Length: 274
Image (cartoon, rainbow, N blue to C red; front, side, top):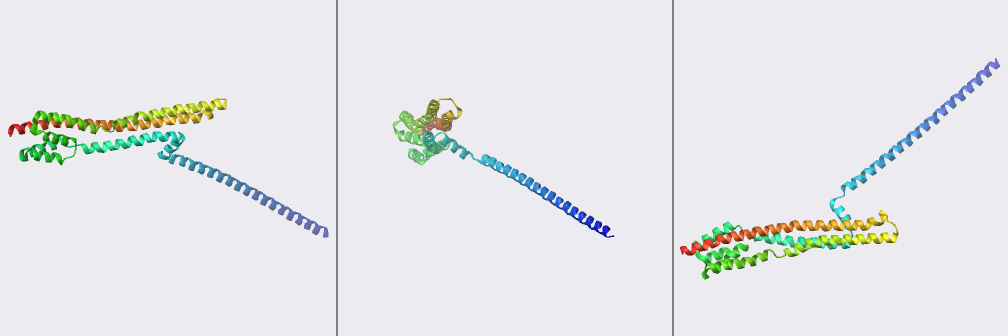
């Protein structure tokens, strides 16, 4: 009986110990699995953060505006030399804007002016027509006033006076065009000069390094290309303004010529009916 009790006691102790060992192993396995899950989550979080950073970097590159890119390229081309090209653009635009404002102020409705002058001649005579021309802005009104001022000397003198004064006004309309054309020619020349300077610098770097490498010549070639591009851009912008100004001057001159013909006819009719 005692042996049976001892045997059962020993069996119980062994089973209890085995149970504890199994539970401990399960806890270790659970802890190991938990650690693996945490590590996996950490890895996935790290990948997500890296993707987010890459996305933000791409957004920064995409959101970089035109002015920022232009500024970077301007500095990369050499701010000292590129500043000269920029000055040609500033001076050329200043002259172009001044001419455009002047020409727009010089534009006159010639048909309306002719009707006013004719009405004034019929109702108030030459003095009334002079007042109409004096109170009207533009070269056409100035030509009419000059013709009325010479009316007493005869129509031949009036025509000669109109032609002579028209030449003076054309010179005023074309004032500053030579400077704009100079800046148009100067901008690409400065760009090509930058190309030559950049290539000289590139060959100097090759001679100093004793070998041909992309990293050695990249800087000089970049300066060469950027200065040429900016010079051509400046010339193209100024050329557009120049062509507009020339077209505007041609339009005003054509109006002057057409209106003076009608003006002389009005004076001739007024003299014959007087």
